[in-house]
Length: 336
Image (tube, rainbow, N blue to C red; front, side, top):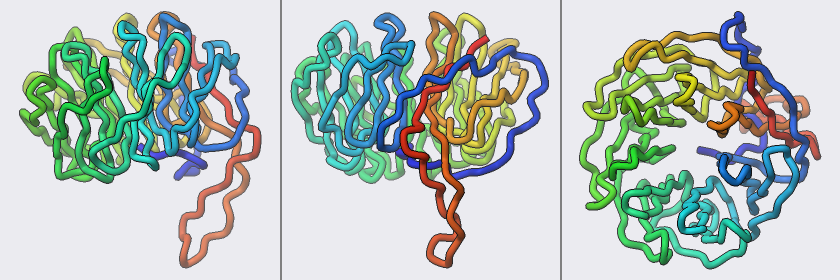
């Protein structure tokens, strides 16, 4: 996952036939400098954690500031352990994990990752461990959530991307450059299995259906695959929008989502564990490619911004990125 100062794509919107009822209800103005990456939502506390390059903004779900977590250089993601009153940030540039108290946002300390470029980060509840997936290090550092002490390193030999846990001691992580899923035994800290995601390429976002044990994985070639989390079998392949970087699953509604940087949200209905229907490509906004789902209200929060025209291409920069319009950073709230 990458921190975004501007979108990589500038494609038009896909056709959006009626079907799901999901629409952008409002945009929460946030402003401020810096890129962004994974957003994390705590439904119980009604808080949204928004990484912004060198700090994490903490907002309530109406967009009002609650506080900031400072000193998180190159921050990508936030993992939450509410029962321990702990939170963790993955700081890509400094190669560290910041540990903070959820109730007060007080910084408790920093731990050193065992690989370069901490990116996605995840709390695994059955072992009470935190997994930092280190992109450039091609490995994961595992910490004890209560003490912050490192307990092991898991090598992959490939670049890890987003991950999900099943609550039963298994962690699933996308390996971007080999288009695989690695299945981690969270207790033994070993890779138990690897599953191919073909025809999916460059897997990014992942979500999990705990009841039916299905993984929803989106990739760079405008596809989502649905994977059986027991066998690794691909049970469905679905067309999504371009520039997808996150997936979500709403267990109460039986809906899966893909947030696409081109400016759409793919909404997919689960007819059964192995049967899925695309309801629509709901318009969002260009650059809105990561998201967080509030399972209580069934609303989706997507960070993005306004962008200036892209500069002219050059031999050194054949695909220049447009700059973010100063002060335009915002969180879209999509619901029905």
